[in-house]
Image 1 (cartoon, rainbow, N blue to C red):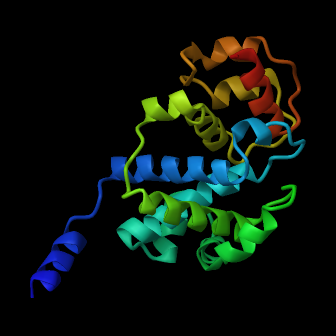
Image 2: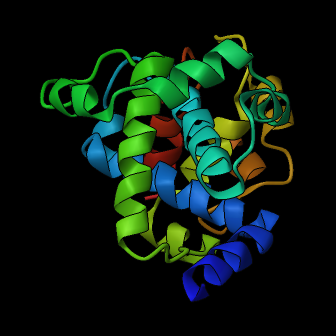
Length: 202
């Protein structure tokens, strides 16, 4: 009886929206760790799939923590129900074998598998949320913010378009606009944006 009561209490007290954001960020960071770390990824020529990885992290957390339906997740993230289904049905064991080699392309199936694997690892750490300040220390928060802002962008991007997308953001304590002024344009991919920002903020 006590077990049933405890389950009811858990279901009736879902985590807050802020906690979902923090957990999704933590899962995204673990995805990057699984793939070899942010430093390694920024050297790949094509990282256009990274926004998909961020979406997958959110989809897995929304399903696992708030028990949202595929339709609700699709509406919240601005993606199709089929994409959500692909993410949530992905096989993380297959992905584990895939990432043993060099990562070149990740579709929603692989992104979903990586995110599910990362989510399980984070939950094993007792669900401890890493706040944004701590993510900054790890060197990952700024990358997540940039990738989210770049979602749907048509590359190559010019300076003004990137300024518009990153307006109001701060990267490693520096306003994004100041960093963008020092960048070379046009930028051909999200990978190039991350690489230039990383090099300019060392």
